Length: 272
Image 1: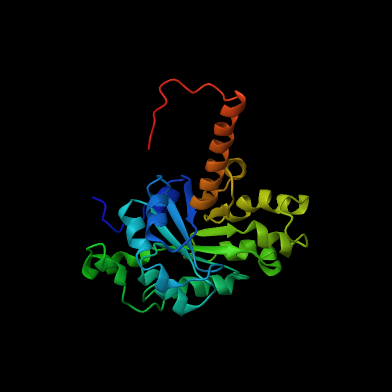
Image 2: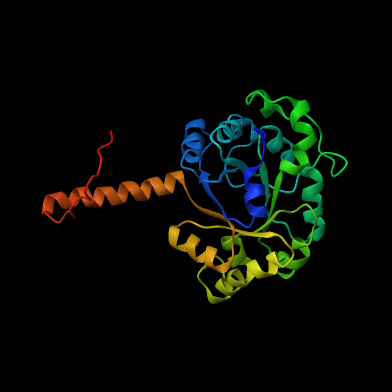
């Protein structure tokens, strides 16, 4: 029987499956809840490039857990205090940006795990929101924590294999935008050099038993990544996908004025 704190994404990846994720772009419980209820396997909460920290996202991970998705928090850097806070508010996965080498990857594992595997202090406060006893959770906490390290720098580009060999790392994630800068083509994700690196990345990671991850913004890009061997894939976020949906529907509604609206599919239901 599964436990309420079981990390379903870790089991999914271990079985060779794909974990599809989406991001919630603000520290609001409603946005997190709506994202989680779409059925995605994991929800990304970002505290690296956003203006807020762990004190602003306190309710988000428990809500996401209740919806059956895995909350992942990207912290701002390789810092044990940031790691501890993200996990204590309920992250089941932590993403650490700018991991440049194997030693930094080992530190990420150390900061995320309780003794004897690591040095994390004990006080997971999210459990009170989810009615989970520490005596039930703590013996399993290390096994249920997913660690995602992000490859973005010139140093990391050269040391992907060494990073992927670090015990305790679950996912090695390619950051396309930062990689474009690392490869000398800042902002040019479509540059042949960047695309070549991204195409070769999954094989460099999976040969060591780790999952290759990537963050993208569209169905087409995510589908391409899956075909390349990525299995931990962020494919958008609630805000931008919502904006795109509104734009698409607006274009169809405006077409009513010119009589060019396509015929509605049979059985289409009206929702308010």
